Length: 487
Image 1 (tube, rainbow, N blue to C red):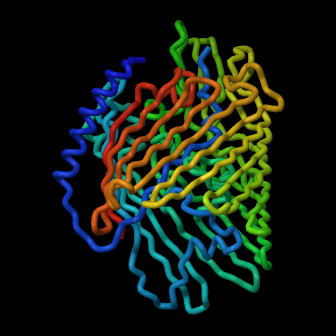
Image 2 (tube, helix red, strand yellow; image 1 turned 60 degrees about the vertical axis):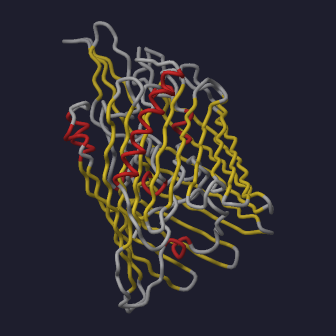
Image 3 (cartoon, rainbow, N blue to C red; image 1 turned 180 degrees about the vertical axis):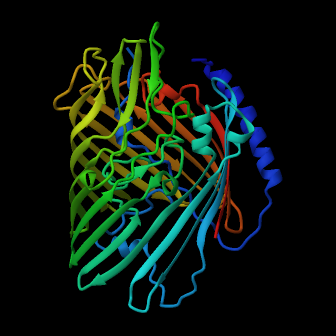
């Protein structure tokens, strides 16, 4: 790994960020009508926070506490009249990034078009159809990345949401590809266990980009302040971690003298035998929104199994796999006047972790874990907001061969404001482990034009040992610009 002093990195950051900002503002002079949508704070999986890599031998931030008991189907789907105007909505977004640490290189020039439309039939059935296209010419203009990475991330077209809604009595139903969000903390994933994530850019993207919908059937029942939800996912979507050699691929084992290291194709179980299902119950009492859930599925996050063969050539093979886990969780939220309290807790059974024990047959051990997080958010004048969250992971049956300690703790801090100017919003997100010097910071400055345009520039900074979640990307610090048009 090529390292730099903090001052050396700062010089690179300031120089390159200045150049990107200058080119961005010179080349972009849009004008429009209505204010564009806010971006979300990046989401971070709690599984990632405490599961260090296998060792070798940003919609807006949760602006208020949502009312759980208004139907999520109703919240996520407008109710247009029959034969209503099916005008598409969505956004175009360009992201340009330059990695200034380690092997300096242009690492992103992605162009994304996200389009959706929705309507309602004469019979009262609502529907939505949306898709997304990505094209990144970086993978055509340079040969910095392996061929498999360039093929994977150069171009893609996908269905995002494709579902129908219908109701009968107190029951609502949704069938098709959809988002199922059971929890939402600022900048982190905890109780949002159903969502898969696109992690090819690690945790540096917005909420509306990082989440991957599931093909599912969902039923919801409402009775006063009581709400029951059931989900069935016959065909799972898993976290997208990309291909070996990508900028943020989660495994980079050190070379072992005399042995070849191979990363095999990811094993993603599908079919009815690997279906996922769960249920959630919610209740509102004296302003407290409380819910509990049970969910079982093949873990959307990959674990890397390890196999060693000595003949005819010594080879260590790692393969991303997904084994079944079971989860029980709870969430609560309460508006306390000057601040909002939110908390989530999840117990996970049989999650796979990499072990340093060379004698272990597949290099993985099953662990039961208990995660919880508590956060407070304060809102001040001039759109100033401060959020603080404390989180912890406990291993009741801790295996001495895994990298995480028996108790892992951390903190996240978020600060954003428009006090400098109503169109200018600086934002800072910091996530840090208490157990080791392992942290990540994202600095972002957003400028909102008089239309649906939004311009931004910022930096993503990683620090820590190469065995840490953030430290493994210590040579991936980057500066970036972003242009977004919403319609």
